[in-house]
Length: 489
Image (cartoon, rainbow, N blue to C red):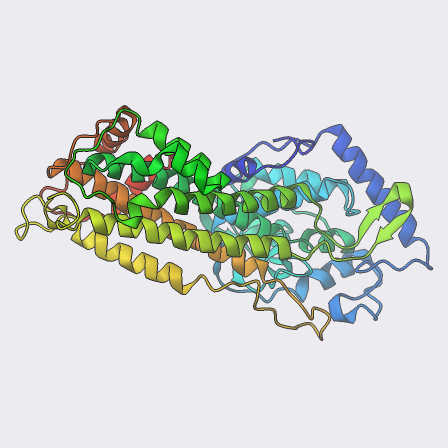
């Protein structure tokens, strides 16, 4: 990845593994210009600069430490208050990539060696150990990013090759030099919503993959049951008038090309089939909104203050306020709940002999002697219940804190991390439905007549044996999810 190029979600996905990050001369030049301008401003006793000459947050009215090294310690030490389990390592690496790109725009006044040091980290498997709880998504993701900054200095803990150890040992084994930070460097590392943006972006990528998979599996369900695909008629869909539905239905028609109804189904299918393009289409429209928010977040600079040398301006404001991502992540959770409910209802239909065109109950190869998908279907009910329990919007839960300096907060970090967790439950629901469709063909379901649907069944059959006899299926659920979301296995 080149820090002189736009940042994308694809880069964040790659950041979970060693990733070469290039810092071209033009990037170093603009970072250095911002740093020189900061020095000029700090030399002027008449110009206030938050966090460099002052205390932090509600204590901005007091002078900060007298030396830059002490100001760094002052910044990070008081933020060492996070609690809970460590964040998933892919989120932490992605968050630091977002932070690195933001700092590389030259508006934060950081030292060039900070950007270069962060870039060097990505070529290794070094990951700071960052606690799950502590951020409210305002003034940046302060507490988690402070833990990351401390690990990069050789303090606290970190992971190397997935093994947790003291950060100083991890840096040494990775061949990295501990970052030397002054007060402005330290504040710039923590004063942005990079964790919120990264978690929301990773959640969006996962939900988008599941959304595509559910559309494909709905088509497979239609074909296996011999249902009439007329509910996807382009004239009907065009009359509905929604762009997302139009695009989803077009994809589904392509997948179902070559199929025909068996004549054994009722005139109108249950809503989980007949209304699927409208539900999936509404999800597509919502996901496009989230796409736009994440793209803007990745292209923006999140920090305070910002330094504009050409205009001789130090701008103090609120670019560390994660409200856009908070709204987007809440929307993502809502979409996840609806998609998960659809997948669970489709599996419920598939295992029910009164609605599945005569397939055995629970898709058991020998009902009573075997139980087929009974355990999997029970688990999907639990997954949906867990998703529903967690969809209360975080962005509406503002609480005043920090002596009312932060009197409104977006809770974007909570929204984004929650969306990330729910996205994984949705993947499990997708895998459960895919496993059920693979089993349905084994116990008497129609061999798909649409070539692309048949290819999807074959892809599942290549890696998943029929459930005959019964066996534990937790691994197969995850494997099926990997197959239908095109995740490398």
